[in-house]
Length: 77
Image (cartoon, rainbow, N blue to C red; front, side):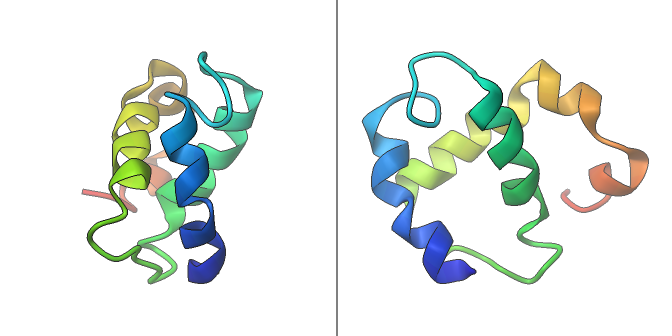
């Protein structure tokens, strides 16, 4: 799984959102998977900066925040 996440790094460099200039359904689908990575003990290495910046943007998005259950909120600090 980590290899798959790392292989997507160039895609997160191309545009502000996942393959788009605007938040889309694709972001809504990808964000919960990325949110759960630490819970699954999958930690992208330091230096995957495009992925890190994307995660910061998508995790701050009100749509994601409002969709999280209490258990999901507890998965990340």
